[in-house]
Image (cartoon, rainbow, N blue to C red; front, side, top):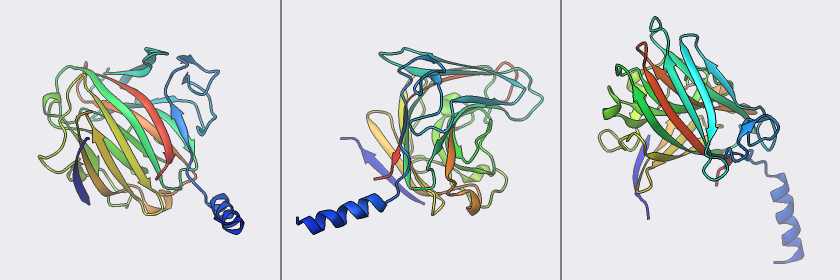
Length: 270
């Protein structure tokens, strides 16, 4: 795992050969979700939207029965973003979670996933099991799981202590291991999560290798961690289709987590 800290600041024959090479080069899919078309099911960029333009499905909610989730588009068309509310109804389960998920095609090639995320509000009795984040995998469910690839999320005992983290897996599809959740940018050198502040993520996936790189920016500074390993086994690294999920988890009854997502974009890696 490599960690960086980044401040923000011819001839006719040749042409034919180049065209042939480019034509034969398979690239990852391109897809965008800017939510500019607001709520609805008739256009790709609506929420939940419909398949098309690189997306294999519309957006869908995946959650356990112990939580309530509400997701709506606000601010369209000038400042569109997807607002997601998750509240815990029953604390009998240790992990009460839910996610908003969408699948995309051609996920077996190197590609980047960019998005902006903002924690809007938290309420209730805090727990180290509470978090907000995003993850990927062949078929994302309500939570990061043994068949997941990458994940980024808040880490810390309370929202006041939250920092951004990423999972450095073992590529074995094993049980979750908290010691593998690493602070992006290095222990004590990462980025604090401030309620109400927007963070821009770039996830660069290398499916054939089972690794990914993460960069997060708060608009003034950036931190990066490279060469993180997927959690899932090699058979699920480079699937033709994969999903993107934005999720939250709460431990105690009454806990509320509200966050927003905007400017989601998937593109071939440079």
